[in-house]
Length: 333
Image 1 (cartoon, rainbow, N blue to C red):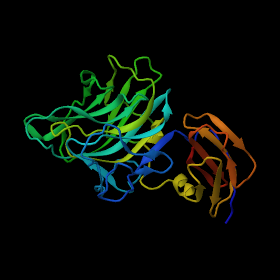
Image 2: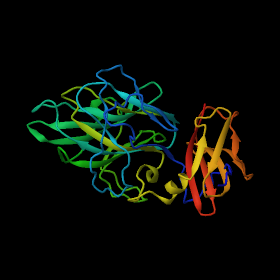
Image 3: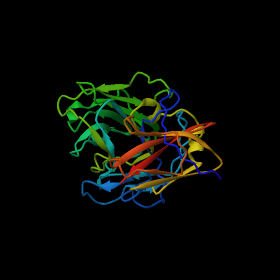
Image 4: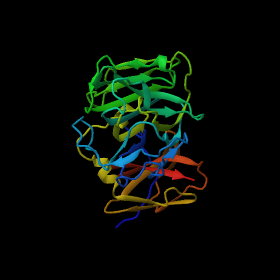
């Protein structure tokens, strides 16, 4: 075993440091999502005080093929009113922020009449809503639902899908919100063709008011029986690039395999981060903020890093080897 560390995040076309989080819900089935911690990111928390606390960990469905990597872990499911949960991440206040997830919508609690409402959305530092995914039933037809893109909590700004979808059908949902655009354009893709190139969106929406300037968390909302059908989501990703929120491939990537050869501890770290490598030798490393700013670089092989002078938050560590490179998240407390 060789234990070597070199902080180096080389900016190359083959490497993207833009993924903020990937949540595969790899928790114990039948437990609630509240209090579950995603390693290197944070803990799901009830931000509304709502009850019951019944966003549950469930066995993932047999998902169809969407061109993204095979799903892992479990999934979450909720229905009707209850607690609203969020997962915080380092502030993103420029560029384009994306998120994606696998979706299956089943029946509503109330038949015949439904109300439109947001189910998944981003939040800013004040807890305000942005870049929301809305659902609405089709009145008179309990076998259908529609999907909408909402720029904030103003329901009148929601732009709806032009087609309805079957209850029980599965979908890949991708959302973006342009923080650099003066109009704060939001885009949504429903079952896009997955490739490294961002395709034309299915829905485009712009807020009439309440423009958001930053985002710090992603939220799951449980509103009421009329508003919230039985909903299952999986493979939740947040990133600042298309290719990181909609990765291509049916199996684990070479980078994922290489990343599994490195252990970082403690993580989160306050003073010293140690790196342990198994059957691989590092050649260089750097540390970057989640927005791509280099904060540390070294060409000296080492087994630990002094992070005591780093500002608190999330960073991205690229580990370069002769056979390729991998990226891992680190948290400084």
